[in-house]
Length: 285
Ligand SMILES: Nc1nc2c(ncn2[C@@H]2O[C@H](COP(=O)(O)OP(=O)(O)OP(=O)(O)O)[C@@H](O)[C@H]2O)c(=O)[nH]1
Ligand SMILES: [Mg+2]
Ligand SMILES: [Zn+2]
Image (cartoon, rainbow, N blue to C red; front, side):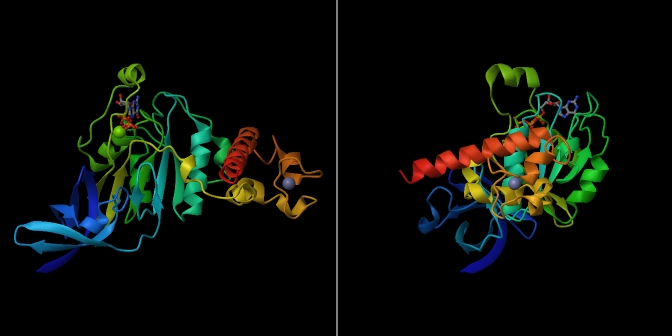
């Protein structure tokens, strides 16, 4: 029996598409790996060949992973927003928290810059912000530079143009793109499964159908502040060392809201904090 190492690039029901040295093989999983979520797109796996069938034997340890959808071994996450559909910055902030916790570098990508330029200046202190357009080609080279030699996951609301950007980077219409109007009417995602595309030179692009991310934020509420870099710099001036910047007296972060700390960012911090707190309480009831 021969054994290979490869990377899972797509999962379709119980079949896994595995890239083995540039050749894609359809594989099945050993019984012990059959449970939902045992094998993620992006996983590095060992595959054995028994006559004509390929079987995944083992999943190698993951460097990191995201859930809903399941993706593993990511270096960079492009969080895509657009003027339409209107940006959901709460989702953006949740994705950033997840990325930082998982040691994934988040980058904010403002797509559809041909329609309008979104004001995202609140994020200047938080992460890199790139403006681009899958339609006009503006900024696509800068995305390619950021993606080079990395596994990049595209996250964000439906219809912001994740698949369109990947097509632009691949310079080929490989992924299905949906019409905004139709999507809003039907409320459907065009992309329904997670898939990795190779751009060559050890560069991989992961298309997703968005993320419903807070399930994945698994941190105690009092640690949330550590993932808001823009607030951290003022923390030393708070009266309490363990200040959560929510209701404590003499909070230096609250004093900076609207100045050094964006108002929207702070409000969303409070919203995520409340959500985490409520979940923690229900968990231990
Ligand atoms: N004007 C303009 N339209 C764009 C741009 N990028 C994408 N679109 C349009 O936006 C719509 C949605 O694009 P998709 O690429 O399917 O969006 P998606 O994020 O992959 O959506 P899901 O797969 O549902 O998550 C399509 O009608 C695209 O043609 C852009 O840069 N400018
Ligand atoms: Mg898509
Ligand atoms: Zn404080």
